[in-house]
Length: 224
Ligand SMILES: [Zn+2]
Image 1 (cartoon, rainbow, N blue to C red):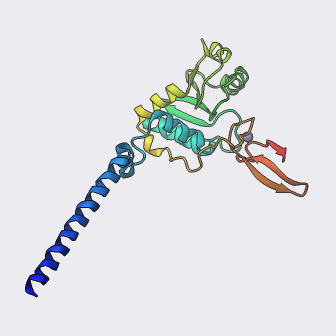
Image 2: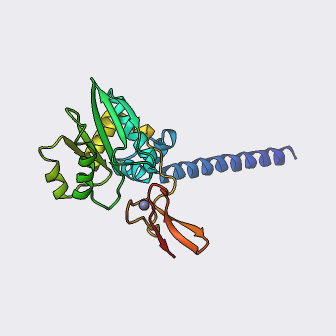
């Protein structure tokens, strides 16, 4: 009888041992199936995003939040900044002062649209009279047309395209101020043709329609 009990105990011990062995093996297999980068990211999700991910996240920000991010960026460079765009945007989104000189910033948060000559002319028109020795910055999450680049040549305008913007973001160390994408632009997500922010379904007395999510900054709407 004693032998039998010790046999059972040994058997249970063996089961337990193999159980732990298998479990340990499984968990190690599981951990191998994780991308090690994503594991590190879980600890600090905002530090290890690639440039493309940072860009995508910036493109997803609301225009007002992106203006504030731009203001924060210039603050880190030692400017006194003020985000003034909001919904009453008349060409200038952020004012950045340093050493008694005022600089003017406009933000174009585009995904596929290029910043056009027309946009640049309007911006220059808004600042030309008072830019003085300051600089006008046109900042985009995409790129500029060649005509726009030519127009900026020889004028007190600095164009920051997506590549330059990322360089500024890194040197200002504001990566952690860029929120993670909450609702990635899906392939089916329709974007406003005027400002490239997502369109959302709204209702009026005439029925449902798609309107720009940045309303009242952008008044684009279309029938469904
Ligand atoms: Zn719009």
